[in-house]
Image (cartoon, rainbow, N blue to C red; front, side):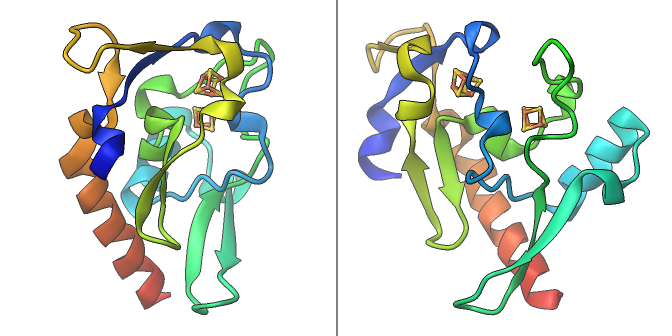
Length: 147
Ligand code: SF4
Ligand code: SF4
């Protein structure tokens, strides 16, 4: 995680008109458990919102949300907010399984992002999710290797 652990921020997502959820190039990789959680929360079968993509370099098959996301409602809000996958929770941090590294993509948030001091009680940091991210990488890779 390195220097990214020092970054602490807040985002004003309700005021965002160019949401990360609707960008076709930010793959929202999901684990099997995250897909089941979305199915349970929405009552919608995975075929409606999941895509399988094979990585051309390593040949592995990953599962991602189809974008623009099926769960983005008419008011541009997430209709499964409490059950959203880890990548959604972390944005503008982005755990990229292809390089096994956490990236930082703040440009999409534009002026909806506010940075706060690293020792502040306000906002949040990717380091708050360090264990979740490590487990998530392990899951994504082990599931892709079995497909
Ligand atoms: S699950 Fe929710 S937060 Fe994630 S991409 Fe879809 S609408 Fe956005
Ligand atoms: S792009 Fe940034 S500000 Fe906009 S919805 Fe996503 S995380 Fe929130």
